[in-house]
Amino acid sequence: MEFARAANLYQSVVDEGAANPGIYNNLGTSYAAAGEPARALASYLASQQLDPGDLSTIQAIRTLRASETGRAGNPAWNSLERFSAEWRRWPTIVRESIAVSSWILFWCILGGAIFFRWTARVPWKWCLVPTAMLSVLVGATLIVDRSQVQRGILGVVVGTEAELREGNGLNFQVIGRGPLSPSTILEIIDRRPSWSLVRDPSGREGWIPDTQLIVASVRPE
Image 1: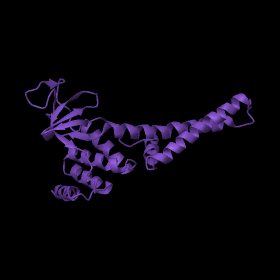
Image 2: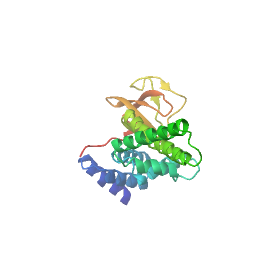
Image 3: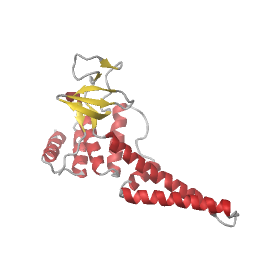
Image 4: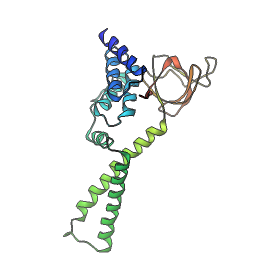
């Protein structure tokens, strides 16, 4: 009961426009403790929009999704994910500069080894691999960021009876063989009164009632 009151308090703060990553994170934690995983996930996703590199939010999303899907395994993120999260704290222009510089350095080292016939006395191999790895890893964080921007607004399925339909009405045919899993993350493509056109993780597109969807949007301060 206390967590439900805390969630209502944080939600009222968000509704008033005083939103930041910390508030959304606390809102997600309160919803999770109050037994509302879909609303918790939507709040964490909103927090991640404001601060993509926050490790606590990333871990909370992974843990929540693992508990909802019922998949066994350790929800802790590995070193690669930690590297990606930390690097995403840097501005995009900085990461782009690092990625491009390391890629140019990679080809300069490789070109020097070929044209000048460097031997083992010149430790060019020890420089080649790290520069290539740095370029790829930093570039990967940029690709992930751009893909998330292209995805637009996200929503989270609430309940166990959410189904995709061919149109924005209950009289339209259901798409697929069964309802969507609770807390499934959907990309919102279009919105109509009481209905939203969404795309599920498998790429299927269909309409879903707004009563079965929680929008993970960020309210401007």
